[in-house]
Image (cartoon, rainbow, N blue to C red; front, top):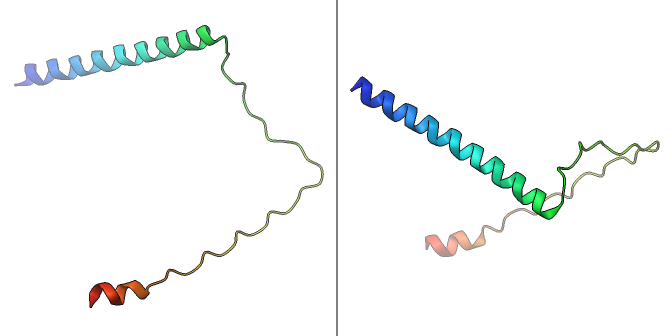
Length: 72
């Protein structure tokens, strides 16, 4: 049984590795076909006058009146 488990584990690893390599190659080929490059690292905007964030509006409470109708 140990040989069977080992064979299954090695097979799963190989399939995972080959699938990952194929996905990366496929993605690179699509990008090359479209003529796009991967996006550069995003940097946060630099602003001297920071505007304070407003608090989100409170959510309305749930209407529970239909529970009485459903429960009878």
